[in-house]
Amino acid sequence: MRVRRTFDDEFKAKIVETIAAGAASQAEISRKYGISPVMIGRWKREYSTGKFFEIAKNTDIASVKIRMA
Image (cartoon, rainbow, N blue to C red):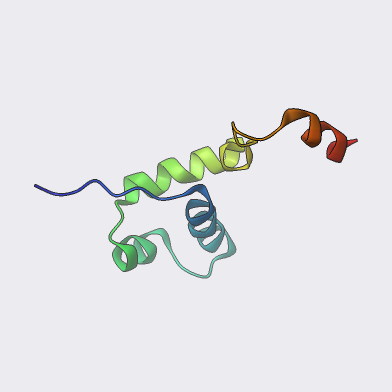
């Protein structure tokens, strides 16, 4: 049985930014890291909606609001 791999948001953002910059194609990244092109497509959609930049759930909201002001 194959073990399910997990990737952190920083890695996903790096992959999407590499593709967007034209440094590598989606197919090249897929082969290099052994990640499904469909999964990379999902990451691209999530990246465009800002999912990788959400505030972590365990972050103190008050300190975030102060930094944003």
